[in-house]
Figure 1: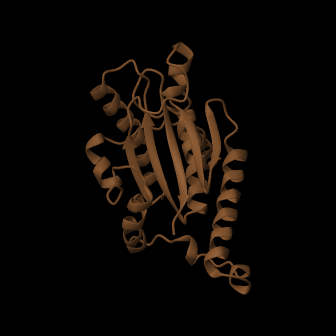
Figure 2: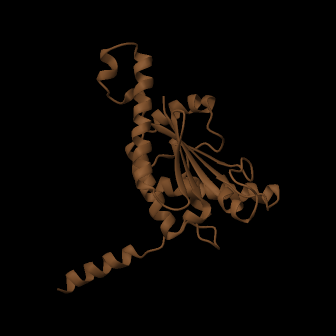
Figure 3: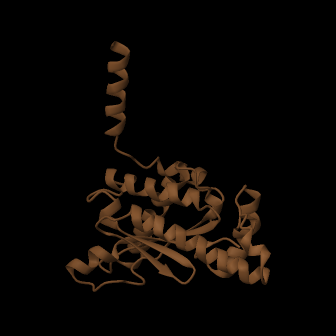
Length: 223
């Protein structure tokens, strides 16, 4: 009985543990192999051998028999990539029905928008307990659909000076990337960037600023 009680207590305790980002001095270890710039077509092409060298894979390495039975291989591979990304989009959409979170399609890419207050502590630069649950859910799906590159971009509102905004947005992006690395997403898939107050998606009023403080995760097929 004592062993059962101890196990039950352990389960309860573990369920209540609040996530904390590791010491900033260790982030480089977690993110070794990640790129700290924007994800462009050119940068993805350059990163492909790095991804493969780290044990990652591309869309072309996934078996899809019907794609090779009929028609042009390039056309079929593109059709398969579209279906692969659509399947991932639906999985994310079903799993992330929470305030402050949206899943959108942009061509072949899928974009997750995470308002800062939905994943971070209100008064501290760290991931909240609810945020950790959300990022854990995203991690599981990204690990399932792993023939992809991921851009993790942080954004702020326009109330800070340029240097502070870039530092804060970079911090949000890096914390999110470290969490993913801790949950088995290889950093060779990642592009990490802080964009400061660039690309606002809402007005710069009191409510809009809350929306503009965000992390965007853009997922694209690795070819």
